Image 1 (cartoon, rainbow, N blue to C red):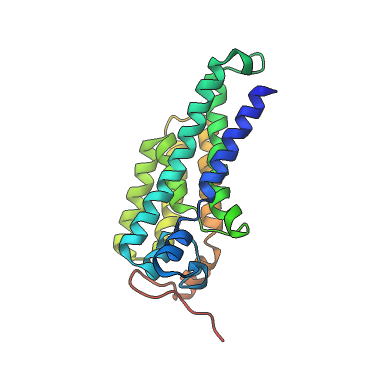
Image 2: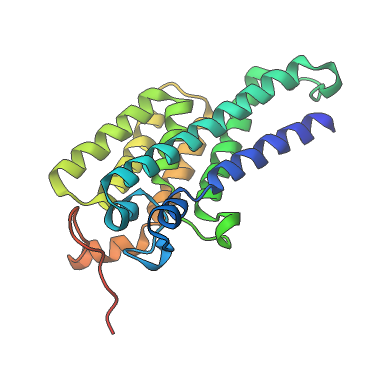
Length: 224
């Protein structure tokens, strides 16, 4: 019982880390505004760039990356302590090498859920691209760097952040399935990548209509 309770605590911490509404806090502190009422109304680095400027957006990006990586680190560290504690003995046959990737997988999903459904924002939030990249870098840095490179390359050509984020997510899926990685990590990246794409449904509609804004342009305004 203690083993599963300790795991649940780790996943709860991962969710709470993901729930930190970085862009919302930046909007309140720097401008006294609710960023959800401005720009694209998303709680992420891209809308922070449009609404608050490049330096606040950079801080938002780095913090969102950090909380994804931190959640993985916390769960890994917690499991190291759990397996070393006789009082929290795991079920028979459940070895650390076999279980840790699955626990990390659940923590990664908890981070994405926290970012998208923050407890501090009435279960609303952003699109989890930056937090997801932080998770990627923590579980498999080659996959994370590959996704970041894809994002940078597409952004340099198109200057469309949403398109860059979706193609980076799909690149991560391709890389995790190509490289030698645990099954749990593959399932996490596939599920997380598809979730990131699904969170960009409105962006996909604007891309197909040719009205998705590029860097330096304002967010599209709804028709009256």
